[in-house]
Image: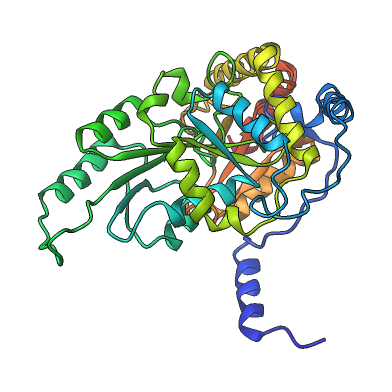
Length: 391
């Protein structure tokens, strides 16, 4: 075997020296405060059995898609599921991608053009940022959840009058990009204000709803629909690997957007489609969102209880403000936050440390993910333990 490059070894050593070296964890059967399985759908026997029954009833006995969707992989479950998703989210269309990462990379690398501008929240997910990096458009970040800073940039752009290089220059389109729930903070933007700014400055608003699906709205529709703003948003990215408990993602938007993505989104075009079983699981999980409210009610109750408990224990200065299923305690320093996470894990609670460079240096944190199946006793116990480790 050839020697591993020295430069790469040195990069690994630097990570290890800063207590930031990533390793694949081993499941230890701890009380879950780490996964994105907010509603417990990932371990639902009912969803598993219904998916299997659906495939048998429709005589679908295939293990794979056999190719990309543009070649041989566009099996009948795709249009059935995409139509269901579009109706559920009150969108003209839905286009399923293999993952949230693929959806964001596909959208941002293909839709904004060379003459366009992307304005994105500085804490947007890596998949959004990677897609923007692959785009030919110019991009600028605005301060996290700060509409005033966004408008400052929009005003600056509106006053600039570059001399066109051609007699008929292409119109510049500005894309405003945010998440409805930020994955590392758990907080939410003021979507109504972002819609106002997008209309005032004639921008296209794009919202990643990965951590809002199943959490916000009467039936888990997401934050955009909970404010009835679905007709004001150019595109929504919906991810199934969180509350829906399965795999894949969809981009919601107009008929024209779907057609464009099918033709130009490379992460869609050049990959094998999801298996019939994967797409059937998405469909069945969505049907459960529509028919069952108990899990969502339990999750909302646990979020409220967690916030009450942390206030009573004096944790307000430590935690990022959040009304979502993601609750984060800022504990600066990779070494310190890893130490506290290890102590909680030894007591039986699966709480993960989020280290730099995943988050900025000095913003290292414990990330608590809440679920419908967590008990109030578990929530109280883990927060009581945390208080003994940090105070």
